[in-house]
Length: 283
Ligand SMILES: [Fe+2]
Image (cartoon, rainbow, N blue to C red):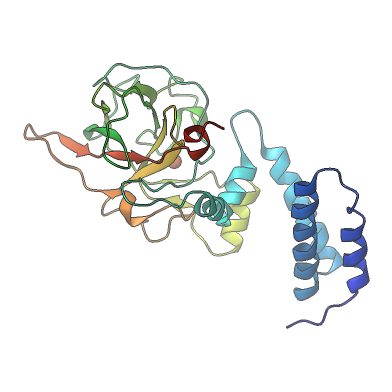
């Protein structure tokens, strides 16, 4: 345990917020300031190191633009995104586990009919049919649930990262039918490296970590009266399942593609949504 050096500086910084009109802001910032001061004390940060940290955060912000979100990457690779996710989604019987949102959702997506392909151009990759149902925890179908999906091309890049891909390639929005069923055609996802040409990549390399994520398809499922589910499905056997750069893998989200009988791969997977308590109680 490190002795508390200069406790009056921390107490003064915390006390200075005591008049903040927003009680939650006051509470959270007091915790942040105490922990940040303790981190500086415990690691005995030098002035040069603090300048390095500030330069790193500056570069992280400067790397962000409409299609690159370096701060989400930073949060992801430090495991903070998964911790926030864990604290806010307890799961339970019949409820699909959530995982990181990631930086590659790009807003409203084109709507495709039941069973359609989400590709906008052919790819030299293993075709895959993905289907299942959206259910409530007790197994009731959630008719009309909105299912948004996105994944990379075989080169490991999302359309928003790759000027050679048509915009909207390998991402789409579907609506579950009366039985809660959904289906779409895609390709088997591949493992990929998160963008490591920026400050977060430099940090990963400096820490002796690889930037790779196991193959996955992103899902975001919304329905009135239910909590929005943000999750992925991962492909069994991927070499990065144990060392996902963003800590997003949960065993319940790993699926194994099987032959659909005609030589094509398929994955059948249901999703369980949790009821939004605030809506149910009429709040
Ligand atoms: Fe992803």
